[in-house]
Length: 446
Image (cartoon, rainbow, N blue to C red; front, side):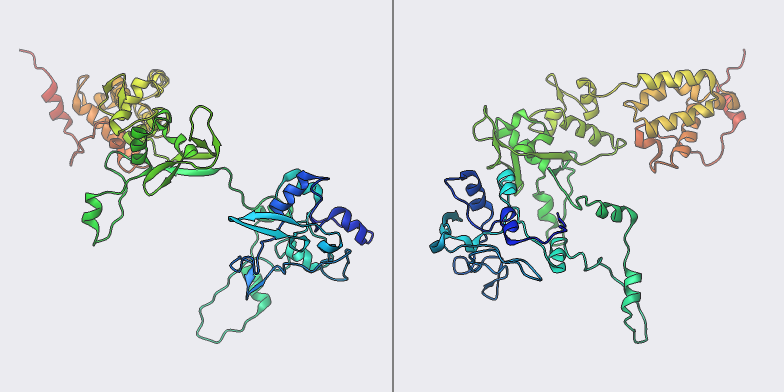
């Protein structure tokens, strides 16, 4: 934040807002604690030669600073803040960092505002800016310009036209410009999001080379999901969690989940700490039905120890994950889709119903597409039955209806009807012989 002042600021005004000295511990212990915790630079130099600020055996931030009895303003640049020597009224403090104890004085204090430091208890460096160079530093080099790149392939020697390169290389979109003008944050990530694997049994992704292929296949690497099953087998608390909740209480390292050592401890579970972390299971398209239903179960089943546990409902191991979802009641039924098709059968032509059926498959994710087809296949194929002059319930009529829908749906879904676990139609090399089909299915009188 920059504050522009019309009248010249005097040293006494700076001292009221900015301090570079240790506060009195007896007068304000809260401020003293905040400053000694957050506003002491380093220490570096002889105390810590490996400090990140050390360049060529000197502190790049120019600490420790020289002592000064009073604040002095400069014509250009930062002022010299008051930093009184311990022998002339300055204070000292003992701090502990990285298992070491240091005695520090005002020479190590980063300029701060007492109100801000006391309010937020954080590292907040406050400076008085009196030159364009200070503003440039504070605003992340606003005079530097945007990042850009221009490259040209040419057989001739290039003339470096700086103005032309700037015009060609610089681009600031309207959204980016408005965002920067209003001073909004450019980047923020909170809370942490941890992605969780999801896969069918023995179907996890494996990465291998020609040399280690056999080793990888014989000893496949674990995933966050398989590690979750192992965790639930040995950890009583983990058995109370669903899969997306695990990252709140555990960290994943070396293919294993381990309890967090930092965070808010739970009252009823000694040794269990919680942090604000979101576990997000990778998305699965609804057309990949088994793994899609597996993902749904991972959001409701607590403490599964295996893939079979996910399919177990009331002591019965279901044949599929979809069946387990149905038994648990976490799948919406298709009653509304049945009503839609029933209403359409009263006012729509069969070919229009087939288009509607395809739209339902693509956009509505029915829980049981096969049941929908078997319930309305006669209405969906009436025109084909009339054209072929065949009786109701003829499999060839239904096959032709499936062929028509399969051709239409392949415009949107590569695998056609098989993507929705519907019967795969038999495509004929030549059109059906209507007269032959009629003779084959018509009963002649005696």
